[in-house]
Image (cartoon, rainbow, N blue to C red; front, side, top):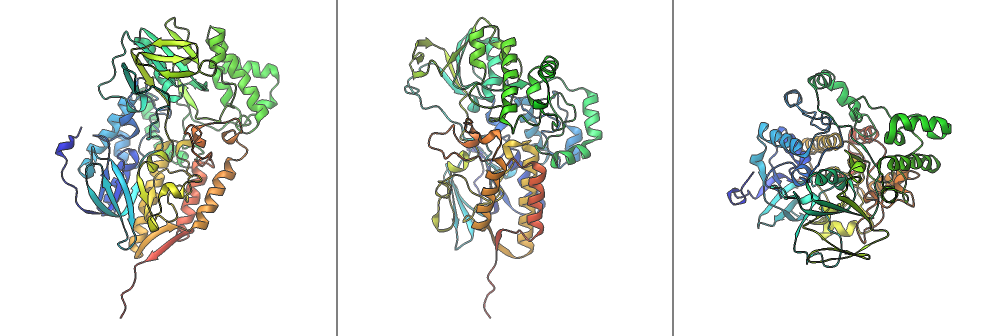
Length: 551
């Protein structure tokens, strides 16, 4: 942990400025050192970890197997670090990030406790001028935004939210020292991924827990378990093949839930008889809805799977009214982020846990002592907001980013995010975004996508240096084509169904343009396209060489 007052003054000029010290920023710094380039990472927290620094809520856990949610660029690191569980918890992943920072001496180039407030492109000087909330003014020839896809937390717009006199906390900004929930009357607003993970853990210690739900969630058992020495040995012996499979897969994943090798489904639920569907339900439970290739793309198949899912909820949740409220009915399976849980539905059978269905009993206000809905008021000692993020674009839009001619990024994106490959934006030379909108990012194992982006950016910087190129930015036509391609690939899937209202589409943010932001063409397909573009001399990019002095 770094004390803000102890931070050394920043130098004025660097080759590259990096925003964010999560897994993307750490690897980018490492690669830039290999290239012999000077770099500075600016990080708002007091240590490394990014997502896994801020999200400390009870039950926070990765939804990718830990042996895959790890760096692949160091064999020594792969072999020395031992994960304790199949799905690693937040404290363990944070320790892993800290271990990497220490092992490779990365902290000496990171300014902690410092938030970037603006990044303006100076066309005459061909550099990015960056200011921070601590009064720093630094410049870099290149800027890399490693700001993360889910790093701009949101609070709901509820009247009276500032009047509450008890303890209020967001899952995504959980205090390092924790929150005392033992014996307390606790409310959780939201039933997204962080709430699904938090609710069973909070219920273990709270005197009472009331969950306020607007939209029920599809969630599947995590099947988490301790990792054995045999698990670790088997994966280490095949890591090279495993990593290659990740890089060429759809989602950057080679191992499925439970640790077995993952294979995309090929069977179709519509080809099963009713008896065969019932048999599959009895054998696989909730997981049956994820075993068929036609469920993500065929609404009839999706409806069959939804009916099976609802039956499973009714089997687990004893109270019929609560079970009905917890069963998604307005959006298809696959429309929103897949969530995994440990005893989520079982928790609602506990006598001190209750559910408020906000579709029937909406919140009217937060009061000084609790929450008021249409049916009345309830008093709480603690209110937990599990209300999500301004995803994909939020962290970037909260920085005053300006490109050529002073154009604001928010203006360029006023009709929805636009870029080329999710990596660069037309009119913003030498500015790179790691796992930006238009890339697989949140639809994949983030570690695989992060490494691919960092490697591509680093290779492009080496290319620019070796060829005497001063500026790189996408042509507007290339940007237009890529945005159209991203939308076309998503067309016809559950992600963009009319009944889908997800953060993938930005619909959780009031006033945000409805646009599907990630790329779902697959990690392997996307990687091949990026490699092809680079091999063709960075096709679609405008490359400007340094001016040659006259005479």
